[in-house]
Amino acid sequence: MRNKEELLQKVYAALMDPFLAPEAARSRLESWLDLGLRNVWAYTGLLGELKPEDFPSVAFTGVVGFPAGCSTLSTKRMELLECVRLGAKAATVVLTPGLVVAAEAGALAREMSAILGTARDMEVYFLVEASRLDERAMVLLLRLLREYKPAGLVTGSGLLAPPAAGPLVKKIRHSLLRKIRVIAGPDVQDVAEARAHLDAGAEGFVTSKPELFRSGAA
Image 1 (tube, rainbow, N blue to C red):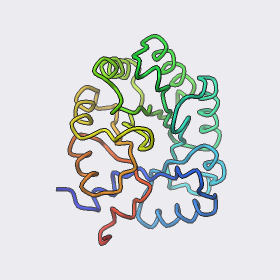
Image 2 (image 1 turned 60 degrees about the vertical axis):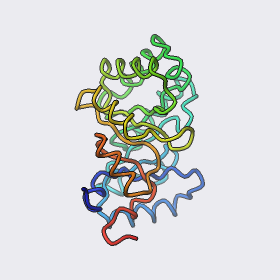
Image 3 (image 1 turned 180 degrees about the vertical axis):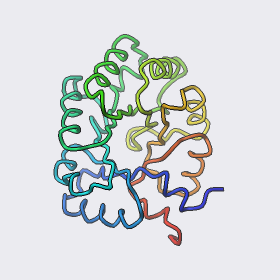
Image 4 (image 1 turned 120 degrees about the vertical axis):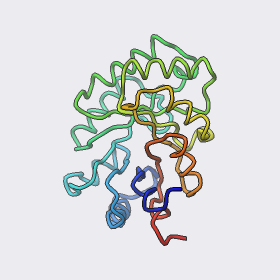
């Protein structure tokens, strides 16, 4: 069983509250650095306010199209380029949900290809609401992920659908190349849930409260 220090090493800390003011976000980030955290998500506007160059030890991930992913492909590509300009080391892009759920193979392939081609030197993750997919949609998604090889798949936003449970995370992990990471996407705030995701094969999990996974925390 993983202890809390081991769990903390798997955390992707999220600054995704739209009501979070820049100074409050900066203060929260500085407290996280004391925990030894180095992987931090931030939506694009906040990324610009935080100035990643002020935090050289942090690998920022800019989040594009969050949470609904319904903006145009051109808009997503421009926002992805903003992540590059602002100094993010990686980006998580929400794929268009209607294309994913409806298993629109051609349109979904074009979206993946265009996004990955926009920032070739950046690690790009795709986010989908995995728990909403039927078998046909899941099979297509996994096939396209194997074909286009993003840095990883995030299994949900934690806002628009129930979280992907352990068996589904395990199925996704077993269906993908090991180099394509699987990140549990809901806002995990429970030690048992975090362990379940990791035991199912996820390489990490997203949480807005990484301090909960510090040894000695209640």
